[in-house]
Image (cartoon, rainbow, N blue to C red):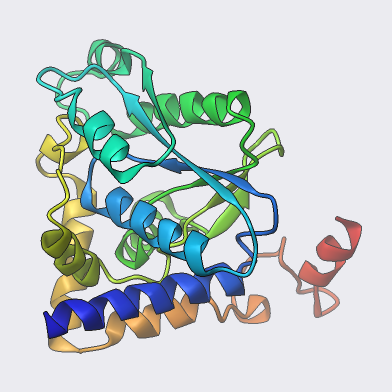
Length: 265
């Protein structure tokens, strides 16, 4: 019980830090909380419900789940859970599972197409529901894994930002768990006994590069404790003049281009 209390406080502190540092929530916001049925999204909803109670500002939440019509998906689990929790919610039914399975060649991963279809559907739902922001359940480990996936396999230094605008520019997308450790979320989820719904798309695939990167990071953390925290700090301390991107730094005149872009925007 003591460990759970400590973990709960750590999660609340990490979420508060992310909300404050990236100005995630403002008075009058209506936030769509994307609920997949996994430990991360359940924890996300719990944390935002907590801050809705204690925050000095008023904002609304609505939980939304996209029922992708995966075989064996337990349709009753989330409505029952959210009704008992007395949370506003909406279940969107769209057979993206069939589209993904039909369009993905045998042996290829489904993640990319699944993510695009899911993202487009959720953006549309947010606007229909009158939401100005969307909250996703990605945590610190997701951010680090994505950075190394892009670094090693896509040739770019990029990851999941804690806050960004969609391409249309009419929705802000938030990741309030950005500073939360996955291990803390696991402890919290086990204690809360969330009704976890397994994913038959992303979660069931073997030999994903993400799994390899995840193991690499876990091994590093085991050998060098606190390395994950150091890497997260590095992502927040970028020096354009000490990299090689001419779009960020004018190497001819030895001037930063970042400030100019901010002023133009």
